[in-house]
Image (tube, rainbow, N blue to C red):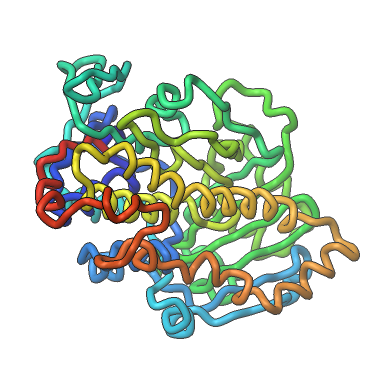
Length: 414
């Protein structure tokens, strides 16, 4: 595997559980996640629970009590739905707010040092008769039967798979992020809830990641076009707070309570025409980076890992290409739908006051039903042992039990 983020580590752990040899190559010198927080929905949590990580997740995170939508200036309640036990019963797993550092630590500690190679910046891939050869900047080449590009939105593996394109697309919006201390927020109602503040051209979401800390994302329009060479840029102090002039005191107090973060351009990856090339395949943001407006980036990487691990564990070397193509066919429709939904939400959450916003607010009354297809999704419905996988080969080509036993000899770089 190339990349030791959430998707790469989850895949490595799942492959190890299936008895498949896996090695992880990461360009960083240490495992240190960037960013503030992760929303782990039931469709991701249930996979991590099956890895035996449920108790650790629960100890290092918070289960929000409710999800709440409010008007930007008045704070008037638009809609509210219970989380916690109600959510768990509906979807069969928890919703956790967790700091990325804590999630990375849980996954990395579970993986250990064996099979993890840091300071490994990928330069090129080469198809050979003996497998895929990977060339690194400061490491001798290595060869694997399968290479998984879990190396993020700026994926070097994707460039090789697709021939260099497409480039991520700027959404026309950007955001400021922060971790606010509950003790400093005198105006905050119900800090242990997920709250959306919906306004004209902008919105703010915040949710707890510990009993004392709230993660927030403040999204606002522009600048258009994005004028900077990088996706994050420093802005003059007070830029974020000024953008929310006239908003409810809760929002302004929260934004003002932290040192202003860099301004983060919101980019999405256009749907790829291919995720595979030979025995090389993409996973997570490398395949389907999406806007954060459904909170599904990490969860989709975890889903990818569960499907790919199950397929590789059930596949002989001679059928690896078929397995990778099945993975692509199983995952592309769902991730494309989520990419589109996340893009659409970028506009829906920032509608100007008026009839369209009022129509949106009325539809929020049925929100749980609208989200069932996301949070209620269970990978085991596709890949549970003994079940026939969609797009699987015909019976005469399906791997026999004896040949499945040889899966542990596969060498997978993820």
